[in-house]
Image 1 (tube, rainbow, N blue to C red):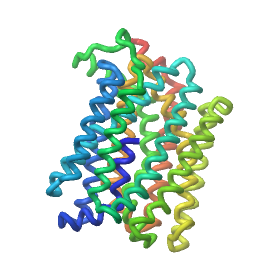
Image 2 (cartoon, rainbow, N blue to C red):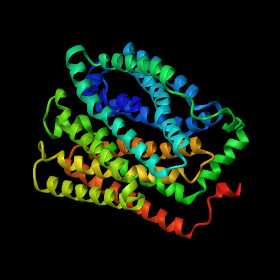
Image 3 (cartoon, rainbow, N blue to C red):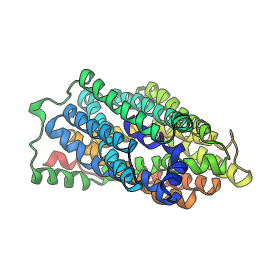
Image 4 (cartoon, rainbow, N blue to C red):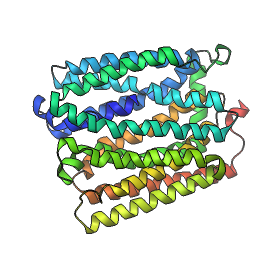
Length: 389
């Protein structure tokens, strides 16, 4: 939840940050974009670091940096200082999501259906953060000012350090760790990047989550400018958005063993397609208003939560001896898509509910195309390159 909270808690404060530092909305938007680019960049390395030094020490070190960066943002005297603190937050915030996926594979590699179920449960808990964060952030902003949101993030980071230190055991024994040698690590990265099915599955995840990131990146404009709601009303967008993900994760976790990965993925994409088309039709014919403008988002994230765990588990299973590295690259591709969509695409579309709906439909279509190509690639492919090394 660390990264999601850092993304969403301060969204209601974006206009106030611009006013305090006398910068425009596009400049303030970079506090999100810089965070996401740094978040994605460091994801490339967390998995490899945890393959070499263990899962637990890397998570603890990252949480320490995150907490210090959040504290720095509380006292940032200039916009540049705030941007620097957001960059440090981004560098540190990705450890949990990357290494968490590797821990699931460490513990449940013998049972992929169970791994998919656990991933669904993780997604359900992860989904709580974006639902709670902007609502909490809005009330903190109205009551105490925008800096109070970073006080909250500092306290949450400190709490997570204590919980991980006391309650998270190491899942990667020393004898299974890789030596931290640059040439060997570079070879492993190339091995994973040269696997076409892994890349297609990773792009499928990134493009599907692009619809979610488009609305998150446009949240302040969508809620306050398009729906004409106050700073304390972000719940109208985020509770339906995340409720769909939580419900989809709960249902998907129960249905995973019974239906199988392929059928779960078809159900998920079918649900996302129906939601995206409904959203385009509604915003084309009517002026966006609650609750109708947000119900398609709930349906979309339900489908997202049903389809994505199966795709993620399938991608990570391609490299059983390099789970951390594979998790890093999967998360990197997903977050790069998130960063590009929220930083570059969202500003082009956030002035219109119809444009946002079309953006979601486009991302879902690209995701489905990547997944179908991965099936064709897998059918024609030889054994995983890892087995030949």
